[in-house]
Length: 166
Length: 101
Image (cartoon, rainbow over all chains, first blue to last red; front, side, top):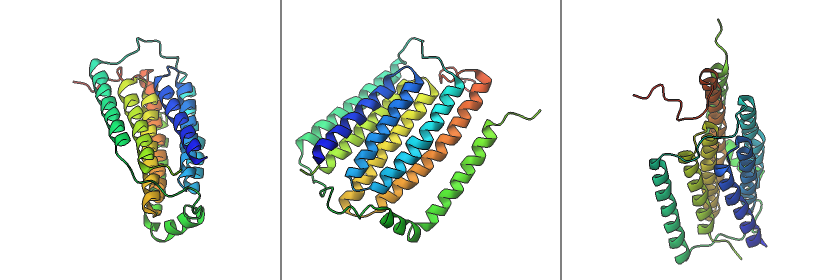
Protein backbone atom coordinates (compact mmCIF):
# COMPACT_ATOMS: atom_id res chain seq x y z
CA UNK A 1 0.00 0.00 0.00
CA UNK A 2 2.72 2.45 0.95
CA UNK A 3 4.86 1.55 -2.03
CA UNK A 4 1.86 1.91 -4.34
CA UNK A 5 1.25 5.40 -2.95
CA UNK A 6 4.92 6.25 -3.26
CA UNK A 7 5.03 5.30 -6.93
CA UNK A 8 1.74 7.04 -7.66
CA UNK A 9 2.92 10.30 -6.10
CA UNK A 10 6.31 10.00 -7.76
CA UNK A 11 4.89 9.47 -11.22
CA UNK A 12 2.46 12.35 -10.82
CA UNK A 13 5.21 14.64 -9.54
CA UNK A 14 7.69 13.85 -12.30
CA UNK A 15 5.11 13.92 -15.10
CA UNK A 16 3.64 17.25 -14.07
CA UNK A 17 7.12 18.73 -13.51
CA UNK A 18 8.08 17.78 -17.07
CA UNK A 19 4.82 19.18 -18.40
CA UNK A 20 5.40 22.39 -16.49
CA UNK A 21 8.81 22.89 -18.07
CA UNK A 22 7.71 21.96 -21.57
CA UNK A 23 4.36 23.67 -21.99
CA UNK A 24 4.21 26.92 -23.91
CA UNK A 25 1.36 28.57 -22.06
CA UNK A 26 2.34 30.09 -18.69
CA UNK A 27 -1.04 29.46 -17.06
CA UNK A 28 -0.87 25.74 -17.77
CA UNK A 29 2.67 25.64 -16.42
CA UNK A 30 1.48 27.19 -13.16
CA UNK A 31 -1.33 24.65 -12.87
CA UNK A 32 1.07 21.77 -13.48
CA UNK A 33 3.34 23.14 -10.79
CA UNK A 34 0.39 23.14 -8.37
CA UNK A 35 -0.16 19.47 -9.21
CA UNK A 36 3.53 18.78 -8.52
CA UNK A 37 3.21 20.53 -5.16
CA UNK A 38 0.25 18.37 -4.20
CA UNK A 39 2.16 15.21 -5.10
CA UNK A 40 5.10 16.39 -2.99
CA UNK A 41 2.77 17.05 -0.07
CA UNK A 42 1.63 13.45 -0.39
CA UNK A 43 5.29 12.39 -0.15
CA UNK A 44 5.69 14.45 2.98
CA UNK A 45 2.80 12.63 4.60
CA UNK A 46 4.41 9.30 3.70
CA UNK A 47 7.63 10.54 5.30
CA UNK A 48 5.95 11.19 8.65
CA UNK A 49 5.75 14.97 8.32
CA UNK A 50 2.06 15.90 8.35
CA UNK A 51 2.66 19.43 9.61
CA UNK A 52 5.09 20.17 6.79
CA UNK A 53 2.64 18.70 4.27
CA UNK A 54 -0.18 20.95 5.46
CA UNK A 55 2.02 24.06 5.57
CA UNK A 56 3.35 23.16 2.12
CA UNK A 57 -0.13 23.15 0.62
CA UNK A 58 -1.25 26.28 2.43
CA UNK A 59 1.84 28.35 1.68
CA UNK A 60 2.98 27.10 -1.71
CA UNK A 61 -0.19 26.03 -3.50
CA UNK A 62 -2.39 28.46 -1.66
CA UNK A 63 -0.34 31.64 -1.64
CA UNK A 64 2.76 31.49 -3.83
CA UNK A 65 1.10 29.90 -6.85
CA UNK A 66 -1.87 32.22 -6.54
CA UNK A 67 0.60 35.10 -6.69
CA UNK A 68 2.18 33.57 -9.79
CA UNK A 69 -1.20 33.23 -11.46
CA UNK A 70 -2.07 36.81 -10.58
CA UNK A 71 1.07 38.06 -12.25
CA UNK A 72 0.66 35.82 -15.30
CA UNK A 73 -2.87 37.03 -15.84
CA UNK A 74 -2.01 40.66 -15.13
CA UNK A 75 0.74 40.63 -17.70
CA UNK A 76 -1.58 38.94 -20.17
CA UNK A 77 1.10 37.05 -22.04
CA UNK A 78 0.25 35.34 -25.24
CA UNK A 79 1.49 31.80 -25.67
CA UNK A 80 5.09 31.65 -26.75
CA UNK A 81 4.89 31.70 -30.54
CA UNK A 82 8.52 32.27 -31.21
CA UNK A 83 10.83 29.63 -32.53
CA UNK A 84 11.11 27.19 -29.70
CA UNK A 85 14.56 26.14 -28.63
CA UNK A 86 17.43 27.74 -26.88
CA UNK A 87 20.97 28.50 -27.76
CA UNK A 88 23.40 25.65 -28.32
CA UNK A 89 25.17 26.26 -25.02
CA UNK A 90 22.05 25.75 -22.92
CA UNK A 91 21.14 22.62 -24.81
CA UNK A 92 24.60 21.13 -24.30
CA UNK A 93 24.53 21.96 -20.62
CA UNK A 94 21.06 20.48 -20.28
CA UNK A 95 22.27 17.35 -21.99
CA UNK A 96 25.24 17.07 -19.61
CA UNK A 97 23.01 17.49 -16.58
CA UNK A 98 20.59 14.83 -17.83
CA UNK A 99 23.49 12.49 -18.53
CA UNK A 100 24.78 12.94 -14.99
CA UNK A 101 21.33 12.18 -13.64
CA UNK A 102 21.03 8.98 -15.67
CA UNK A 103 24.47 7.91 -14.41
CA UNK A 104 23.36 8.56 -10.85
CA UNK A 105 20.20 6.53 -11.47
CA UNK A 106 22.27 3.60 -12.65
CA UNK A 107 24.59 3.75 -9.65
CA UNK A 108 21.69 3.91 -7.25
CA UNK A 109 19.89 0.97 -8.79
CA UNK A 110 23.03 -1.11 -8.63
CA UNK A 111 23.91 -0.41 -5.02
CA UNK A 112 21.88 -1.55 -2.05
CA UNK A 113 20.59 1.09 0.27
CA UNK A 114 19.34 1.67 3.78
CA UNK A 115 15.63 1.67 4.02
CA UNK A 116 13.63 4.13 6.00
CA UNK A 117 11.55 3.03 8.97
CA UNK A 118 7.93 2.23 8.20
CA UNK A 119 5.71 5.22 7.62
CA UNK A 120 3.07 4.24 10.12
CA UNK A 121 5.57 3.69 12.92
CA UNK A 122 4.87 6.82 14.88
CA UNK A 123 2.79 9.57 13.42
CA UNK A 124 3.44 11.70 16.52
CA UNK A 125 7.02 12.31 15.46
CA UNK A 126 6.34 14.98 12.89
CA UNK A 127 3.14 16.26 14.36
CA UNK A 128 2.36 19.93 14.82
CA UNK A 129 2.91 19.59 18.54
CA UNK A 130 6.43 18.23 18.19
CA UNK A 131 7.49 20.66 15.46
CA UNK A 132 6.01 23.59 17.35
CA UNK A 133 7.74 22.59 20.55
CA UNK A 134 11.09 22.46 18.79
CA UNK A 135 10.44 25.68 16.92
CA UNK A 136 9.60 27.75 19.94
CA UNK A 137 12.34 26.50 22.22
CA UNK A 138 15.44 25.73 20.24
CA UNK A 139 14.78 27.62 17.01
CA UNK A 140 13.07 30.67 18.41
CA UNK A 141 15.64 33.17 17.16
CA UNK A 142 15.55 32.00 13.50
CA UNK A 143 11.77 32.10 13.72
CA UNK A 144 11.79 35.76 14.69
CA UNK A 145 14.43 36.56 12.09
CA UNK A 146 12.21 34.89 9.48
CA UNK A 147 9.39 37.23 10.39
CA UNK A 148 11.69 40.23 9.93
CA UNK A 149 12.68 38.78 6.54
CA UNK A 150 9.05 38.59 5.51
CA UNK A 151 8.51 42.17 6.61
CA UNK A 152 11.43 43.33 4.49
CA UNK A 153 10.11 41.34 1.52
CA UNK A 154 6.72 43.02 1.87
CA UNK A 155 8.27 46.49 1.99
CA UNK A 156 10.53 45.67 -0.94
CA UNK A 157 7.79 44.38 -3.20
CA UNK A 158 5.51 47.31 -2.42
CA UNK A 159 8.27 49.76 -3.32
CA UNK A 160 9.22 47.88 -6.49
CA UNK A 161 5.69 47.64 -7.81
CA UNK A 162 4.70 51.22 -7.08
CA UNK A 163 4.36 53.59 -9.93
CA UNK A 164 6.68 56.54 -9.75
CA UNK A 165 5.04 59.55 -8.19
CA UNK A 166 5.30 62.45 -10.60
CA UNK B 1 7.51 -2.90 2.08
CA UNK B 2 9.66 -0.04 3.22
CA UNK B 3 10.83 2.49 0.72
CA UNK B 4 14.63 2.92 0.74
CA UNK B 5 15.90 6.39 1.38
CA UNK B 6 17.76 6.39 -1.91
CA UNK B 7 14.47 6.23 -3.83
CA UNK B 8 13.38 9.48 -2.24
CA UNK B 9 16.74 11.06 -2.91
CA UNK B 10 16.58 9.89 -6.50
CA UNK B 11 13.13 11.46 -6.89
CA UNK B 12 14.53 14.66 -5.40
CA UNK B 13 17.43 14.56 -7.85
CA UNK B 14 15.12 14.02 -10.81
CA UNK B 15 12.92 16.94 -9.83
CA UNK B 16 15.97 19.13 -9.28
CA UNK B 17 17.30 18.24 -12.72
CA UNK B 18 13.96 19.04 -14.34
CA UNK B 19 14.07 22.40 -12.58
CA UNK B 20 17.61 23.08 -13.83
CA UNK B 21 16.63 22.21 -17.39
CA UNK B 22 13.66 24.55 -17.05
CA UNK B 23 15.85 27.41 -15.88
CA UNK B 24 18.36 26.92 -18.68
CA UNK B 25 15.94 26.28 -21.52
CA UNK B 26 12.98 28.59 -21.14
CA UNK B 27 13.03 32.25 -22.06
CA UNK B 28 9.95 33.37 -20.18
CA UNK B 29 11.02 34.89 -16.85
CA UNK B 30 7.95 33.59 -15.04
CA UNK B 31 8.59 30.00 -16.13
CA UNK B 32 12.20 30.38 -14.97
CA UNK B 33 10.88 31.48 -11.60
CA UNK B 34 8.60 28.48 -11.40
CA UNK B 35 11.50 26.17 -12.20
CA UNK B 36 13.44 27.73 -9.32
CA UNK B 37 10.49 26.95 -7.06
CA UNK B 38 10.58 23.38 -8.31
CA UNK B 39 14.26 23.14 -7.39
CA UNK B 40 13.51 24.44 -3.89
CA UNK B 41 10.80 21.84 -3.49
CA UNK B 42 13.13 19.06 -4.54
CA UNK B 43 15.55 20.15 -1.82
CA UNK B 44 12.68 20.21 0.68
CA UNK B 45 12.00 16.58 -0.12
CA UNK B 46 15.66 15.74 0.53
CA UNK B 47 15.57 17.50 3.87
CA UNK B 48 12.48 15.65 5.06
CA UNK B 49 13.95 12.33 3.90
CA UNK B 50 17.12 12.85 5.89
CA UNK B 51 15.17 14.07 8.89
CA UNK B 52 13.21 10.83 8.80
CA UNK B 53 16.32 8.73 8.35
CA UNK B 54 18.23 10.10 11.33
CA UNK B 55 15.13 10.46 13.44
CA UNK B 56 15.41 14.12 14.36
CA UNK B 57 13.02 16.91 13.56
CA UNK B 58 15.64 19.48 12.58
CA UNK B 59 15.18 18.75 8.89
CA UNK B 60 11.51 19.62 9.07
CA UNK B 61 12.24 22.90 10.86
CA UNK B 62 14.66 23.75 8.08
CA UNK B 63 12.03 22.96 5.46
CA UNK B 64 9.79 25.47 7.20
CA UNK B 65 12.44 28.15 6.88
CA UNK B 66 13.13 27.26 3.26
CA UNK B 67 9.44 27.84 2.59
CA UNK B 68 9.58 31.22 4.30
CA UNK B 69 12.56 32.29 2.20
CA UNK B 70 10.91 30.99 -0.98
CA UNK B 71 7.78 33.01 -0.26
CA UNK B 72 9.80 36.18 0.31
CA UNK B 73 11.81 35.57 -2.86
CA UNK B 74 8.70 35.01 -4.95
CA UNK B 75 7.10 38.22 -3.71
CA UNK B 76 10.12 40.36 -4.50
CA UNK B 77 10.90 38.60 -7.78
CA UNK B 78 7.41 38.95 -9.15
CA UNK B 79 7.39 42.63 -8.20
CA UNK B 80 10.62 42.98 -10.17
CA UNK B 81 9.08 41.24 -13.19
CA UNK B 82 6.05 43.52 -13.07
CA UNK B 83 8.32 46.57 -12.84
CA UNK B 84 10.39 45.40 -15.82
CA UNK B 85 7.28 44.62 -17.83
CA UNK B 86 6.05 48.16 -17.35
CA UNK B 87 9.12 49.55 -19.04
CA UNK B 88 9.98 46.93 -21.63
CA UNK B 89 6.58 45.36 -22.42
CA UNK B 90 8.26 41.96 -22.51
CA UNK B 91 9.22 39.25 -20.03
CA UNK B 92 11.53 37.28 -22.28
CA UNK B 93 14.99 37.23 -20.78
CA UNK B 94 16.81 37.38 -24.09
CA UNK B 95 15.28 40.79 -24.75
CA UNK B 96 16.29 42.28 -21.40
CA UNK B 97 19.84 43.06 -22.39
CA UNK B 98 20.36 46.73 -21.57
CA UNK B 99 23.26 45.96 -19.25
CA UNK B 100 25.01 43.64 -21.65
CA UNK B 101 28.31 44.97 -22.89
